Image (cartoon, rainbow, N blue to C red):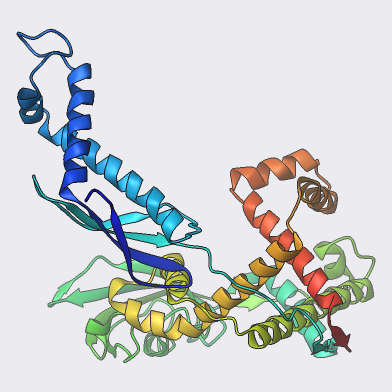
Length: 414
């Protein structure tokens, strides 16, 4: 028997694991072909090119022949698996648990990611609520205060202890096993969570120019589990204290912030910007409702392999330490599952309706972006291309087209 046998051992809607066995006879035939290929290419002392004995070629080029055989049988096995298992791969397969001994069969596992078969039978008929949160005077005032903080100056404070909201220049020396480490300078705005609360409390007991040795206990939620509850000896040197001086909220401030005639014009623009944000948030909530109803109506599942891939992406993006990965993965599991279901249902609708971003769509979107920035479209395109964000833009346009189609199938109230 020279037939390659392929058996699915595990998998889900988005991945397959296949056990492959290539019989010894087929391996021998592949070895013979590999020996002939190598013999034709090499020149050995005492033999004319292409006439070296096969036994010598096998011995001298054993590793190269072995790799050639592996490449051939893996390629053949993959081609057979794609056909026999009706696979629609989204990436090249990976090979695991390879077993290859001279004179015997070759055995290995093929792991491959495949495109899940998702059908959206119910694409509409839903009732969606769109609620736009009103913009309040308090929100406008809060945004104006943020602008004031951006334009604020920091003035020295003399002869008094620092308080929350003030900036301190402090030097911290830690003691490791009794020996002082190199002093570390820090600039901290108190009360904003930039330092441990107990450390900030010690700093607020000092006068500018004062130096003190103290102890703090690291909190039980410290990122490094081995340091939780540890008592640390420190030397604190408070060099400077500054208070924030906010500019007055008047017409002059409005003109400094931008091209505004007076404070009223600035307030009006801020209010309009907040209203636009509220509209976008309302639209986002409608989309979330729609996705949820589509998922429920069509029974969309989240394949574990895709969920694992998304979680792995989160781990990499957030730089999660290895020892914290299990806790992080458990916390983000629901988020990853929701993301997978969302991506699957949108991709299924896009494919069924042919709602993909075209080159003309991309050009139009870039033209809009360029007009908003008052720069040439070519400059925007080059910037996106350099940052490898063109694919991201295409996905965003595709999503917009898909949601545009789906929202036409349902009723949006509000």
